[in-house]
Image (cartoon, rainbow, N blue to C red; front, side):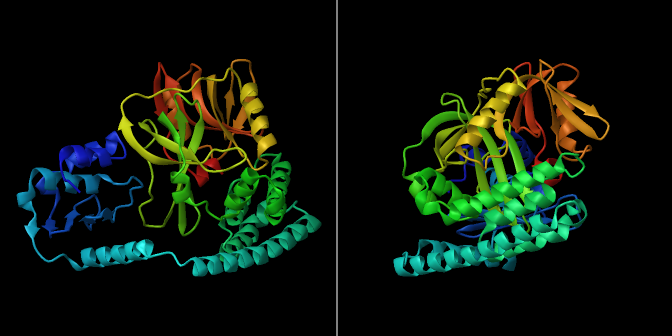
Amino acid sequence: MLLDEDSIVSLSPDAQSLSGGRKLSAPSHWPLLGSSSTLLWGECQGSGKDPYRISVELEPFGYKCSCPSRKFPCKHVLGLLLLRAHAPQHFSETTPAEWVTAWSAGRNVRQKEKDAPVDKKAQAKRASARLNKIEEGIGELRQFLEDLIRQGISDLPARRGELFERIAARMTDAQAPGFAFLLQQLRRGIDYSDERWPSHVLEHLSKITLLIEAFERRDTLSPSLAAEARTLVGIPQNQEELRSRDGIKDRWAILGHSIYDEGTIIRDTRWVYGEASKQYGCFISYSMRGQAPQTIPSPGDCIEGEAVFFEAAYPLRLLFKSYTLTDSFPLPEALPTIASALDRHAIAISKSPWVEGVPCYIKDLLLIPTGDKWFMRDSVGAVLPVPGAAGAPSRWHLLAHQGSLPSPYFALVSPYHIIPFGLAVNGTYFSGPVRSWEEIR
């Protein structure tokens, strides 16, 4: 990789990270700096007792930082690269530290495995074995659901933790992570303080049952619905094949961000809107805990690039074949009311029964706190509850920007609730902090 200012700036996930990186590009922040022909490394003193350890491999380019930031690259990596670009004399040519060589060696092993020729026979054998494990797991899940309905759900709020945790772990073992995620939603994604929770639970159980039926009858479904069922169960679509397709070239505004902690896996979702195509989509990346996800910039940023949607009955998930950061930020066309957003949800459900909230930009919404419950009201007085904990920081962040006047909001909307991610004030878009399970619940 060419270490010049422009190349490093292009790596930055957002302006805040770049600003932080520039502040850390002074030698005084780095008690240890080193380099070899292919590696850079350093220790950056943070607020804790131990400095953060940063490793960078120049070809093929990669990096790792021991800090807890969810931005990639983080400000420490950017600071190290900027320091190298502007003041290389501070890097001593020496033998890499053991923690640097261990990371590089592991990375090289993974790259060789990735580049190895595909053994079609072995690949088919693995796919068949996985399918058998999934089908065995589905049999257990079907029995679990039948037992749950037969026994009743009245005491579910008290015992949901152990109950759904156990069956979700079994679905992970059965290599059906999609079912595990849906079951975790029953544990953490339902607001059991809402008096309507039984109907919410039954609807969610119905969707899981419907997915079981769809997966077992996938050969009889339309190609798009069958592909969606396989993906929801956890069988990934071939991203290399998707990248070979023609995509949608557009300017994409990044409107919202959520992170779900699924145990050992972190699921990172960024919601985007295309200016010319007028399409919403979500970019989802998965990473093991402690690893950097392959993701896109943060809410409030805009990228120009070519996006390809995953095959689905109601396509939302997408990937980017390529993109570059751009300065402009196109705001979506606003829907007039909550009712019009619910009409969009009805259209989505008619195409895919597993759609949860649909992305919408709605004008003249007011975020209203009322004790331990929050609501959003539109210009004609229609109201939807905002789920989750009353003290969630993103709500207060949005409320501070909103003030007392209605504003257009980007949110996920369903008949049961509305989840706001950001709003526009006088044409400037403000997003809330990263939304976690504890907020969306």
